[in-house]
Length: 381
Image 1 (tube, rainbow, N blue to C red):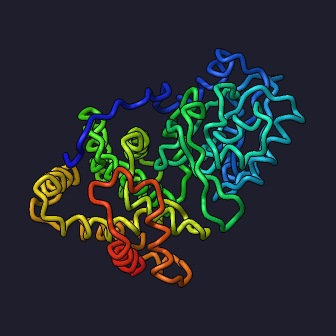
Image 2 (image 1 turned 180 degrees about the vertical axis):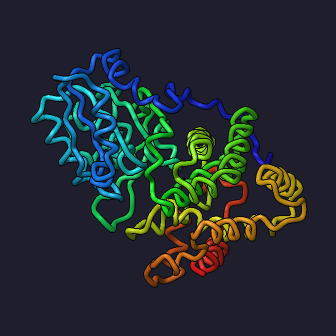
């Protein structure tokens, strides 16, 4: 590996994984003393019947409240609206049901319901977050973000603004219930984009400067799962084996995030001042970053890229960036940020923003401002 030290990973929350795992939710809440849970979600999951599937697991007379106002790119306003409902209904625990936006919102909400300061204060200064947080169980309905097990997330001040991070060991979920059956109604384009988001987590976790052999093995296994099953899950949402494998790959991607990220997610972060889907931004940014890495003549980098080729199942001399672009094309995803609809912005401004992003700290090769300018120009397409 290209790393220089050893990292001790924080413990992951327990995970209940498998078809029908959602049936464990009522007991899991009761075990944590939750009698009046607030389920936060989005309107799409209500329309697709997923919310009813979850609420049906509770017995008659259960005191369950549903808040469906979380937006695709989570905002402080959405969290504050959920907070008002939580207090109005005298809730005593939270269930995040959805993709990364919902699950990250739940991390901020569990702080807001027990802390006195405005939400933005905890985004700007996570050190103010204490262990006094509300019980929180995550239920992912996409296979990609890994947010169901991580202790960080991104929240927008308002729609269209850049993200602020909420990062504290205290926001790590108490339990993740990962039921592949809940991902089966996810549309093909979102299946593809979120699956490739998981791929990006695994790639950057593996290439991180932090060394931890078990975590690296998890990342490599996650890469293989995504590459081997994302096309099948995208082509046929009812493919149970593909859905199971892709969701497991997403959980492994969440584990890989603990190793640190890099320039792929830096680009995803600077382009996030739009309403474009996070997963689509990540997978469109990946080829440009891998082309940048491929120019590195360092033996350790070459060895890592060779290992990455093995996990992807491509030829020893294959160009990784081209392989990712080809996979994107087969999935109907773009490898061009401009094609996604990102507005024109000055390259120097974007490069300067990229230099400030904390994801760069664990990059195996840290781009200079001029190199970031070139990478960004390449990613824009």
